[in-house]
Amino acid sequence: MQPIVQISLDLTRIDEALETAALAVRAGVDWLEAGTPLILAEGLHGVRALRAAFPEHPIVADLKTMDGGYLEAEMMAKAGATQVVVMAQAHTETIQCVVRAGADLGIEVMGDNLGFPDMVQGARLLEDLGCDYVVHHVGYDERRGIAAAGERMPSPLDQLGEVVEAVSIPVQAVGGLSLEQAIQCPQYGAPLVVLGAPLTIDADAFKTADGDLEASLRMICDAVHAQDVKGRSAS
Image 1 (cartoon, rainbow, N blue to C red):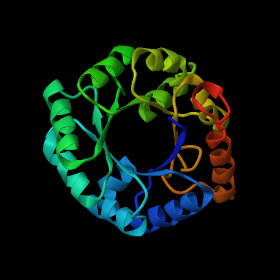
Image 2 (image 1 turned 45 degrees about the vertical axis):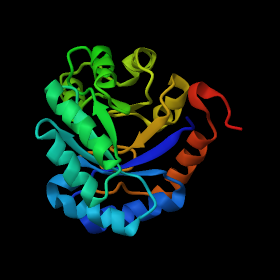
Image 3 (image 1 turned 180 degrees about the vertical axis):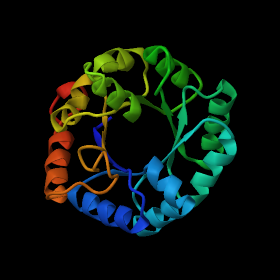
């Protein structure tokens, strides 16, 4: 699988999400994510707006489903999502319901191991239950809380290699990565590179980051797309 760049639109207004998505697409981003803040603020309207504006692009609906798996996946699919996210912490029946909805509706399921007691075991569980991708995720609050206590902030890179080795489905690393670390993800065997806070979204205000974002995204996309998984140059 060739590396894919996904932008997490962790914004709270549809107009800003569409504007940011447009410059991301111009820069070469492959997948658009309706981030959790956007879905909370705008609901299905945000997903529908992205689908209307970008009819050819995959759209990830990051609802972080914990219950009502089939219904939530169905709602997101009908709004235009091509991938939905379910949590490893959910009941196994919920994960299976989302997977079943994915099969019925022709969408893919991304399983997120955020908060799972054993992150590697959580990744295996998600694959065993039929998810198409693993999102290896160190959470926003966890990172900031630990850093505020004066301790080293955890990174998804800490166990990324173990997660990749544990599963046969594609892996995405999420949670406080620097620009350089995000670009390096394919070298760990994780082909899905996601860009969100703080790289493209202000992590405190949940607004588009200042600066020449389009130029930064173009540089990132070029660097990621030039790789193959585990660092081999793309032919």
